[in-house]
Image (cartoon, rainbow, N blue to C red; front, side):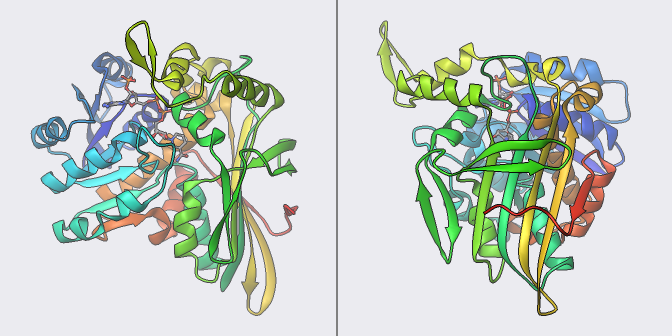
Amino acid sequence: MGKALIIGCGGVAQVAIHKCCQNSAVFEEICIASRTKSKCDAVKAKLDGGKTKITTAQVDADKVDELVALIQREKPDVVLNLALPYQDLTIMDACLATRTNYVDTANYEPEDTAKFEYKWQWAYRERFEQAGITALLGSGFDPGVTSVFSAYALKHQFDEIHYIDILDCNAGDHGYPFATNFNPEINIREVSANGSYWEDGHWVETKPMEIKRVYDFPEIGEKDMYLLHHEEIESLALNMPGIKRIRFFMTFGQSYLTHLRCLENVGMTSIEPIEYQGMQIVPLQFLKAVLPDPASLGPRTKGKTNIGCIFRGVNDGKEKTYYLYNICDHQACYKETGMQAVAYTTGVPAMIGASMLLSGTWNTPGVHNIEEFDPDPFMAALNKWGLPWKESFHPDLVD
Ligand code: NDP
């Protein structure tokens, strides 16, 4: 059906690449391009020989001219951005210059400010519309599947949704005292920032990890979870008419929190450059270099993830509660793709999002968050491609 250019070759990208090769009817050809080409070549060596034709390339995705040259050479139908949020705008610029569709999983964040919001990417709306191309924002799990769950719940279960609690539980154990399940720099920036939630038309800000709840997760059991700011809250607040409150909670174990606090206290999570032996270094980037690579956690991680949304609202004049979630097993993901479940739960929806554009199933020029599209084909694809969802009409609620 078409060709995708995949930028980045970390844990998430490697899952997406596996899945594109499984879905060769849609992904006839892929080009894997990243800063370190040897990683792309290693993945190609593992997967070559199937129906999907794979090529590789080196690219610095901070440089628009390099990206434009690559896109002009490879001529993809869609660019799947699985590098870091810092590269979102340069890749969008290159897509605009070459009139190519764009998909990502994380919203733009300037490297020198730990603040992620959609305003920079939403500023491209008119230009994408005029160019007749589509940018699909946030096609991972959260944002991504959680946003599609919200669109699906609104379409099929509610007249109006008033409350959404997004619950992200990772009960996996990798055996290290401290490691992050996706890019350490991005992960630590996210969890050490102030929390926030949306209520009655405005943001309510909290201190990092200030709000804690305990939740009894289906198939996992009780876990401590903490309220974080999360990017899908911003777009769902706009796209869910009548919404009163949206919160996001993520589980963390005590060992993770104790290490994080200690690293913060000694300044290792700072993004302010410091001078060290005549060089400028960013402490958090140095920390990333000494932590385990998330892409290497696959063989060691055991246990499950459970990520989903609890909705409350009204249907046919009656109050209603509805819980949609997915359970994923780290070892099963590893057996299939060599990666653990956090990379898997992001890489599969990234492939599905790209397939929606490649197949023309979703085709509305402009810059769109994923919940703006018809959720039904995506929900069907989740069941088909390894992330089956479950529903409950009487879930425990979060107070
Ligand atoms: P990794 O750090 O494992 O991989 C990032 C990849 O991008 C690496 O291959 C890296 O290259 C490459 N890269 C970084 N900078 C550049 C550049 N300037 N030019 C070209 N390539 C570059 O990250 P993950 O796979 O864990 O995460 C990928 C993305 O997925 C992130 O944006 C993350 O925020 C997002 N994510 C989204 C989730 C969701 O549910 N929505 C959940 C988890 C992650 P090199 O190998 O040289 O370092």
